[in-house]
Length: 173
Image 1 (cartoon, rainbow, N blue to C red):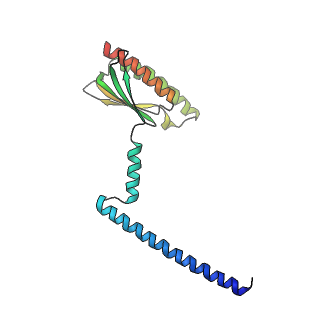
Image 2: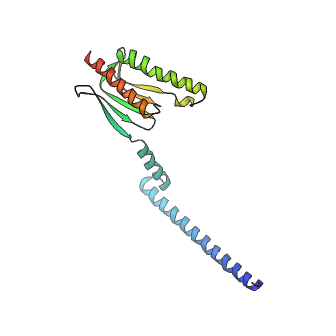
Image 3: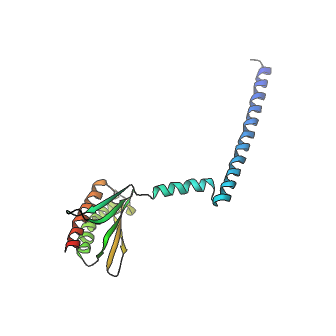
C-alpha cells in the first residue's frame, strides 16, 4: 500500500471514531433523561430501583417449613434463608423451660463451641460462628428465634429436628 491510501484509511477511521463518540454522547443523554423521568415518578434512579428490586428478592425465604408434632399439630414455622433460619413459634415458649435448658444451652451451644474451635483454627471466620437471637414475647417468653450461620443443609435439618422434639416436650408438658 502506498502512503496516500494509508492516509485515506486513517481519515476514515478518525471519522468513524468521531461518529461513535457522538453516538455515545447521545445514548448517555438518553440515559440521563430516563433517570430524570424515573426519578420524578419514584424519587429513585433506575440504578437504585434495580438494586432495590434485587434486595427485595434477596430477603424472601428460600423455603418455608412447618415444624409439626407426631399428631400433625403445627408447633412453629421456619423460614429458611441463605445464612439464617427464622423460626416463629405457634405459642410463646417460656424461657425457663426445656427450650432454654436443652435446646439453647446444650444443643445450640454444642454447635457454637464447635464453630468457635474452627474459627480459632482459622478454618472459618469468626463471623461465621453459629449464633442466635431470641424474639421476645411476654415477660419470660420467647415468640421466635433467628439462628444465623447454620452453614450446611445437614445442620439445618438437625436443628429443625431437635427443635421439633423440644417443642413437642414443651407443649405437651
